[in-house]
Image 1 (cartoon, rainbow, N blue to C red):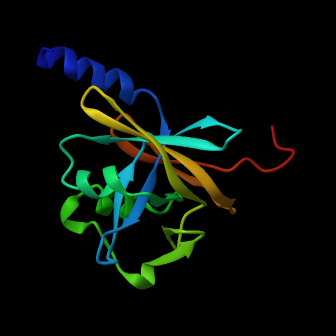
Image 2: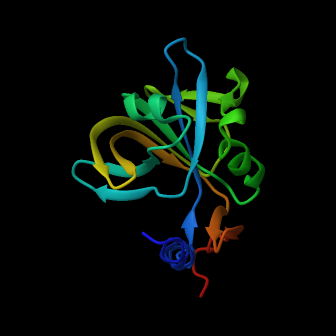
Length: 164
């Protein structure tokens, strides 16, 4: 693929606004790590499945490609610093006081929603690994969500009940 086509594709996909999440998992020694993900999508209600994509060249590939249990934290509108932090491998570590156990998965203490997942399927697609997780538990709370649109962070304001 030519560079111009790759850039055109990136720009076009950047016009699709997404939410921003941090996927977290435990290493073999118990240390927790996170990675910023905006490719999260629902797959199925029965069973409850979601998927996210992990780049083959990610420095955290070995951890997340093999994790059997992992958590997803949907970031709040004020969590841009967390999104930027976990986008870099050198700042992937999650301190014990920053995390909580949710079902069998680690999640960040903040955020507007959490999912605990068990790996259901892994499927290679191009230069990414699609990781499909069975949701073993989920919860949501109040607050506005962090968004990503045209390479910039923004916010999705919660609509009040009954507003137009």
